[in-house]
Image (cartoon, rainbow, N blue to C red; front, side):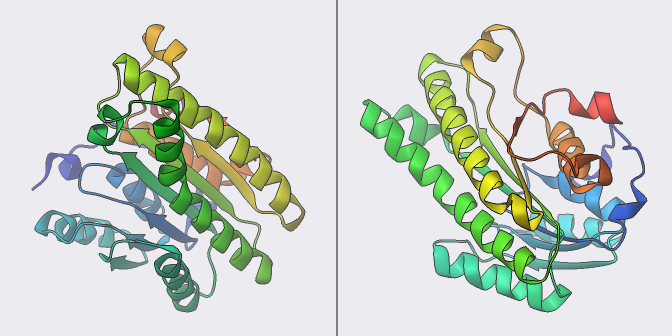
Length: 249
């Protein structure tokens, strides 16, 4: 049994409005996002989970989530382009009749950051990292609009192994770009009641101030908060998740 499965360092405040809610989580892996998915499952949400992993560990994690989730579907096909993203969302909407919350998880490979040499390299990697979650945001927001759902979309981007100068520079550019795009998308979809927020890697200032990256429990706390009644007035923000589990549990 995986330690992440049996360890429960935090129990979150009950949010009964999440029971039966329809939640799409993309980018879940055996090392990132399980506490987040478990938080929704423990509240009785109906889950569609996309993972790039097709491993015994993911099968085990899905079995644990199914113990509390009222309904769960697991897709192990990687999302390699817009057509894959469109197909996943269409399937989720068809199976559940709509989506109330979407969480897109992205973890940047540290080897990709280590290869950066120029500003152009940084800009290309930032664009590549954000392309799929932003496309998923547009697709799912449009689906929410079509069926009059005032939903929540949260894009979570993490940089694995960050801490050196190159990683911090990349994180700063990534955070600023994600902030601009999140504000723009939130404004575009505000009239339809769709809320769009993000969690980005900590800035170099935060790292120098000894604030670290958010844990999986922190991300779970933020995602649950944004999907609940408490998050219904929040949109267009890059949220600081570090320490959120302690604040909201």
